[in-house]
Amino acid sequence: MRYNQPMCSSPHPGFLVPLLLLLVLAGCGRSGPDQPFELYVDRLARTLDTTPSSPMLPGAVARMPRTGDLRLEIAADRLAALDFLDLRGCSLQVTIGKRNSSLGRLARDSQKLLLELEYLRLAPECIDYLRQKGDSQLAHQLQQTWELKRQQLPARIFNATLANEEFAQLWRPAPLGNDYPGNTNSSVISALAAVDALATRWLGGDYRADNEAFELRLYDISLGDAGTLWRALAHQDNWLDEADRLLQQRLARGPLCPPGLRPDAAEILPAVVRKFFIEGIQPRAADLGRRYHELLPPIRSLEQQLALVLPPGYRHWQSHRDGTLDALARRPREHVTELQATLSSCQKQ
Image (cartoon, rainbow, N blue to C red; front, top):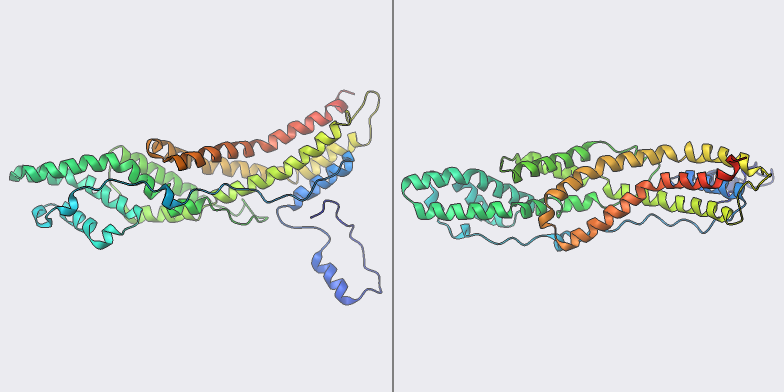
């Protein structure tokens, strides 16, 4: 990648057709997400008589810990040893039957959560029924299990959401294209907000759940773009760092407008900023900022609800993620501050 791009011109009449075809295919300019930044940095370097550095590296995204390393171990209860027939007359009998089956033992964490919610919802009625029948021992056992499951619920929700494969997929970055984030929609944001609201309701003691709707929400989350957003912000940051470096390189030689002197760069630089930064870069930067402020709040809200059970590995990644993304989201404003510092000597004249 070079910042000084060749001028487009017509080929010499004697050039062969294959060479002409190659030129047509190569084009006279670049495309892709680097293009507006390359143009801006190139014009900055020319205007300020500075030297661009080596090509930009792709934006780095910190990988989320493996889901298997995050999954919380949950203490077993005594329901596996329960005599299924003892629960005749209780709707809970079917729930425990599903849970103790081979499919129930091998179920995904999301399905295990739904079965636990079903137990929490149905057990009180069954406990009352057993007490009325005089089976206080079994009622006591079910009551103890209910208390245990209620205590374990935050960990169950964590395993089924933040620690599951759908959320891991949410944070895996896709290749950047010209159309990001314009090609996104609100489905992942709606799904994240819905899961956060469900966690609030479940932790508040309302254990109702629509199994199919919950799984569909998780699927929508798996199609989300949090990792791609991180990559796009890091990509933007790399290029703005280079633009800042050029501005600082020029200021190291002294003010752009020394006392009594107004060079051509004082007139050219504002035009470069307006055309290549304000018109070329800022609209997409605003879209990225908007996506950031829409996508992160429901994730952070869910994390806050489950804060007491988040394992150290997740907390470490979360802290790094939040600090990094917050800094990346501020970068366009910080670059504007660098531009103002460079032009300040010219505005005084």
